[in-house]
Length: 458
Image 1 (cartoon, helix red, strand yellow):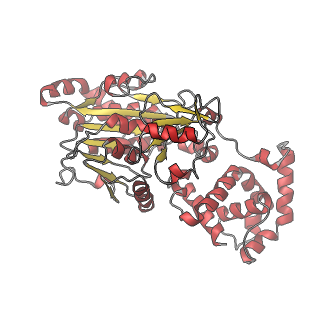
Image 2: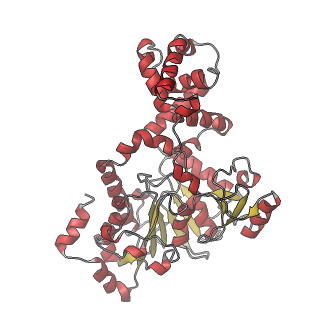
Image 3: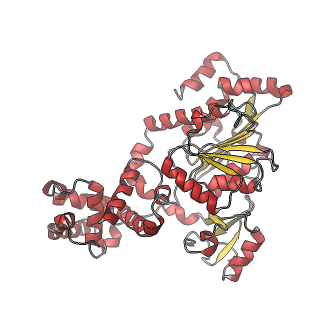
């Protein structure tokens, strides 16, 4: 029964919004991770149906021993949809079995009501846009070159071609070096190159931030990844730095920090120092961090751009909450706070801010407010020009949402249209002393207008 308790606790963590499905599953014990994640995912697919069945059967009212709604969901799933509860007889299992007839009757009623030919027809369907997003595979250059990886996969039966037209074809991405594109349904979970860390599964848009930051490749390079877990962007930064210099990877959550350390070890990131602390509590004047010149910020966001991961299973019940103005305002306030803190590092020359959100309030408006801040003006931060921020990428920011800064300087990705998840990337650069007056001129506005921009996020 412990297996079911663990699965229910995983659902509890998802309800508490402690992370994405993928991120929380990654923190599960490795020996039970595959089995637990399978049950959690299947339960989520049928959650609305199972919830209806439990409510109509009055299971929780009749059985006081079952105090957890998520435990009831897990157990009823296996009873009705997976051939039975796989646990020894005990009071909780018996409590569920006492209502087997009533639960089955409610399932039958739902199938008739929804005109479902089979139980599978009751499952929540995946986002249709996911079928237009390739499975992206980043070659870990710590172990081998892209050309070697290409030969490896062609030897395994893949051929060069369009992965959206054939499940056996793959090709190189045109924007990100060392990134390969496979068919969306391609699985790499048991692929030796994946389990050994030689390839990393990472969406294309998620590769943009590290690529735009472009830390210098030398031994004196000092970089911060402010919100590092689970570690994909951190390992990408480390690879771009060719293992030189120092990369401080911050993660405040203890469990996610454990996941980060495992990821960095698997990816052989020798120049990374993981730090279990909140980036916002870091003193920019600390001698350890004072020399930092490059900072990557990918803070918590609404996740509204994600369509090809498992999180669509949470969207049906959370859409109204996730997109509520109150929540978006709180996220934007936090995001702005992160940028302003990064700008206080005296030697920071380049700061990349990104989100996996499609909402302007978390993207263009946060950037405009950051440019209007005292931190940006006093330090001389402006947006990097387009030719420094993926110039070949076609989709840029929304001009009508940016009161300060050039919308062409920021990058957007739209799910279903750009063969990626939804994403946003911006890059702040510090002008030299000679160019500081120009930065102040670009960022400064009338007191009234500047105040209105800042107050949008207060």
